[in-house]
Length: 518
Image (cartoon, rainbow, N blue to C red; front, top):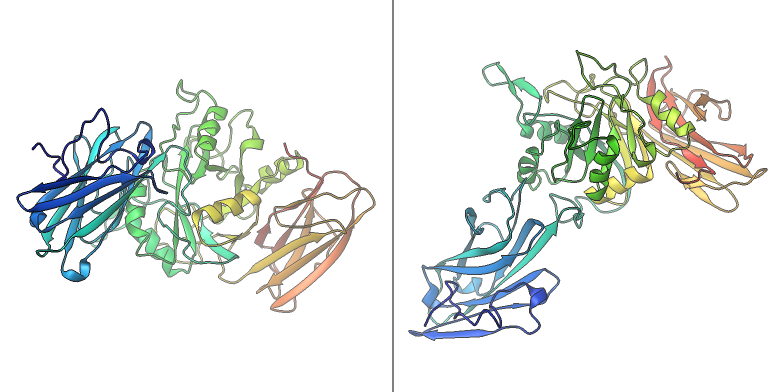
């Protein structure tokens, strides 16, 4: 009898297959082999996964390698496998590996029950590389199974495609922390995968390993970071390896799209995004935005106030005819530039006045993980503080889209502002919009925590106002409020907190009045 190497007899492939994708299987195909006292079963069935493979391992498979073939469809960008089997308590052990149609893709033995592979990253033990359609196969090594024991295995296989959002996070299956809260992080940093450097053990300047960036961020108590190396996507493989260990620090895939006309971070996707702006490949910025949005990413313009020239080509933002309705955010504080000529606040406020709702973010732009805390461009200086439903990639990015954010210029661990508006017909927080007809009173409330001795100011349409008492904050937790009479027109109001010397400490995002979507 001719056999599949999986131990299942070969059926007529014109009629059925033991391991076809679940969507092609209308009835479970169950095939039994009885040969030389051996028996095994394998079949595919419909399930919540794209492909659900079942089979039986017996004593006849002991100290052999069982191959379980499956088909990868076209346009798949990631293959994820979840494997389980029974009779572990009876001294059964099944090891796991995988081949694609041409190459070995990895071997985890018995140390992993779930793994994923894509062009950019893979679970440790496995190799990133192209996901080509065709027949792939799981390899089941059977070091031990006792006579008379039948071990049932199940392999749930999920296929991802370009533009699929992760269920929760790219590198984690569940939120790292549950429940809504203010989460603190850094959204702009570099390492060995681009131009980050630090001193080696012998004191030489070398590309700085990504591990040091993550370790430093964890040591400083951050909740999340985005690694934003220039144009490349090689960092994601390291991030996938590190996330399980750093299980209190969310690692968000990012990259800094670095062009001759400006820099911008993209958060979320791991697919390649062509950065060659003004080339035939990416003739204009809208084409780049098309790709970002097709992958469900968000784009944030970086350090737009920095001059662009030979010393830093493209550092300022000079992209002509930028469609700000398609931009999610602007980095208003980069490193230590909270104010002054290099601040991103002027461009941001100009576009707010033009009617665009854009979220203000901050980023250290760190290039050396060893820079001491509380200094310019140290990891976490500044910190972006985000009110999210939980600590997961999807929740953090959705909160950025919503504008539920403020920037802590010095990267403190405890400063908080909560700026809200309320009318008889609605309520809003930072980033939200509220409709208010002419003559209606809008009641604003500002709650401030860990800011005693500092001074609040309310910015109305880009200008400081006298709407709120700006005297020094007296308590560790203090609330102030004011009323604003709407004229029915479009306005935005937000809050800064300044030190006694006038230094900018907190940059809040706006509450929007009567903003129509653009």
